[in-house]
Length: 550
Ligand code: FAD
Image 1 (spheres, rainbow, N blue to C red):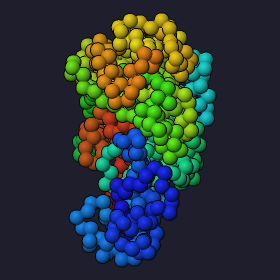
Image 2: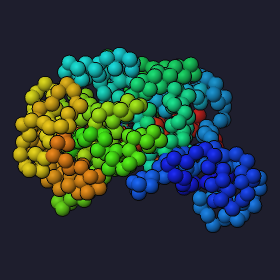
Image 3: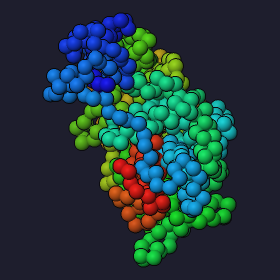
Image 4: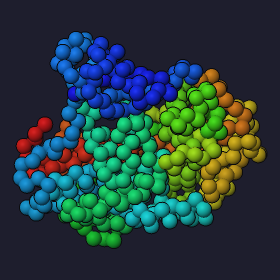
């Protein structure tokens, strides 16, 4: 089988056009093309009037060695790689329960913790998954209570609970990180097994929407439990017990939960996400090595989705194979700040995403259909740890910076979880908004027109004001007067990195595996899941002393 990449066909080609095009591309008679399957399908919309589909195809030919020999210098014609997942070690009874080993702990049931738990369970290591929030169905009720009735449950909300931060999301499932071990493929296969549509395996920018994610998370739980794993919900880890191993080095010995009980453990995956501020403080108190890291701050912007579709696809807007258009924008502002779009949600809604009382935080989500009226995305400004120094003199200062601006947004919104909003026209003119125009903000429980300068640092306002007209040159209408910004977008990534070595263990606390977004090693559902697999593999190798088969 050969893999043919960057293979372009017109948007409206029929299925009968594929084999002859392959034959022409490879210089063989069409009768030599025995079979072909789509590995991935994307599109190239750089020329709006001539949008093309871009395929990666697996092709079976009559004489593959001869074709490969003729295309030796062609990087787009290669043997199809073996991307199937193999366990890192199969010493011992892989896939069967291994009661001879102490049970590993996984803290957090977000994408990182779920994939770590799943791999550990599949390897027979019967993990215990500790999750501070509630099971996903109950969590959904709690989350809607904030969105509909302004009632926040601090332990069960958009950030906390089974499924983690990505559960109420657009469910975008792609990443651009290098992935030599094909962990991304394993994540996608597990998601399909858990109920995601098969198309996520072939579409270049797959998404599943929020409702599917809920059932997928339940299905992954069922599989982990069937394999001997165990979930403990409403089990918030409040402290980390650290002792000294026989070699005199610091080692994790267990954790204490909010109810005062303790669990002894030699191996712990720490997958707490970027909003676990109390956990970061507890880790800091336990002396676990960590560093401040850059984050960003800004707003969620909304436009009519039809405007984005037209700007990106021209007359092809609305084509079923293209779906609702997305965008990615970057601007380097004169004050030295980078401004960029973040987590763009086509046809979606802006959601209230705080986990702490008295704070307002924005993010975006959508359903699988992406059929809502507005497109939304974070428009955020890059920061460095030097920006947080007024907010604290230790590694937790970034967290305090976030808290400060989230509280300012809460006050600017009216002090009842409504969010501050401003029209783009008003921000560009330097005046507060007093009313809104044609774009109706989708954020619930409500919004207050105001001046974003009340809840963002000055340099961020200056940089966003400069960036919007630039973005309007790339996407016509992006800086339209009535586009609406809702604030504040602060939880774009973790404000710190929990340092780990090549063995995936904390640099100064053996047996602790910091992983996923909270530890600073992922940004999104896919990369968090991939990092969870990596952590589970490293843990399994260390725990079992097994041979590394890679
Ligand atoms: P999390 O998902 O944050 O999971 C951490 C888990 O740990 C949580 O369940 C939490 O309750 C639990 N926990 C925390 N502290 C403790 C403790 N002390 N004890 C026990 N349990 C604890 N990414 C995408 O790729 N695509 C998207 O479309 C997308 N949309 C998003 C929309 C929204 C509204 C949000 C909030 C995020 C979105 N993201 C999206 C980002 C994505 O959700 C995260 O990158 C991803 O969830 C990180 O995974 P994680 O497992 O590292 O952490």
